[in-house]
Length: 536
Image (cartoon, rainbow, N blue to C red; front, side, top):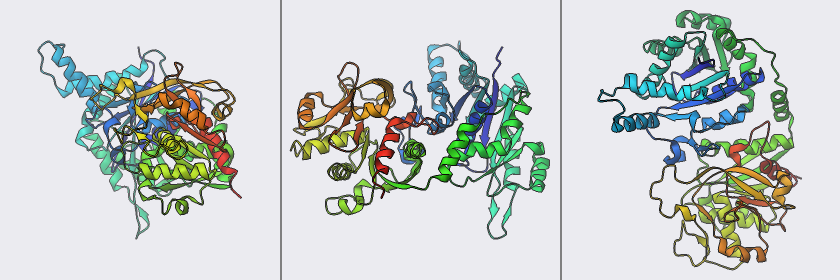
């Protein structure tokens, strides 16, 4: 018998209302009351995962510990809770149909006609029940991607309707996140879109138990009463989701003040345990009280879309919280950097960060930004491709190898200081074939990296195909670069640094995927600390 309680969160009226942070915020509140949670994202697109999508299409690809390429919402889930997620927590329509079709090809259905109901819906339900295996959490919170009314979401809605029918209202809860827009001229909030959204949901056999209304200012008692009446939801179960003032980390507190967790626990007949919210209160106080401002230049290919570097930007803010400073992120397009303007563009920065990415566009601009950081003693942090660009810059300007490059961009370079990992040589398929997930890294004692980590071995998440070419290692070391982090077999370089520089680190992995506001990643803490020393 399954003991977990299931909470399903759908969205209506329009996209981008914040289902992901709502799921994460509710998970945070339930954990604060001593319950265990597991969070899951159901994405309606037919891609197997977002790994082959452009960041402009779907934002960043968040990588889990076990190497799943997932939706960026899983990043919110991990940052807001103490949980760590896996490929089981990210489900797409593509995965569902792929699994069912493979089964059909094997003959597992014994000649029966394969249909959306029951075969597709059963597969969706099995992915949800998968989270109940091993350590059964108190709550499983599932975000249904897309907007109610989209044709792609229909099988997911049918699957969760069946679960309510099977397990009853004491074990399955429906939350619907919707929009109550304010007409600017009249200054009046309108409930009609919410009414229509709930009506649409009812056509699929789902009556929401709780309505969370995204609204410019708190709903009045009269408006809550009206929504309650027309949507057949208890008035106390109509929750205001007001735009937060300064930080996304205020969202759990906002929902706490709206008593969302209390309403959920009451609806599912669970004990209202005492809440311990001290850590989150402290974070919010630090964010509000920090006065010192530092400017960090992020020189990235996809800076026009904030979600393309979502985990990175959040990790920089975590470093700011740890150092009690405000981090102002200056987004710099590397394609606009050249030898005539790079000094002027970068002169007022307290730190420079070059993040990961794919493709040759903007590479020379990134190398110039790194050159500026190295020669002007500006704290520098290179992540994945950013580390590789730091290697190329060092080879060109310190070793004098003018044509040094990565074979990703120049296969015929005489100095291929970055090259394809050996096991990647024969791979033709793009999806899910990179070096993905957590791998161990041995950290050299007395290095800057060791001083930040305070340990000599760690595990970090990767997403790349190219690596430092090991045969050049001795040349780099003689010229002053330190390889302070290596794979246990010493075949792969994980961390580089320049001991003669105030703070210059490049890492082949993505530390931003493991940073949380309550436990910020040590390298982001160190980078912001070093950068804040330049503030006069």
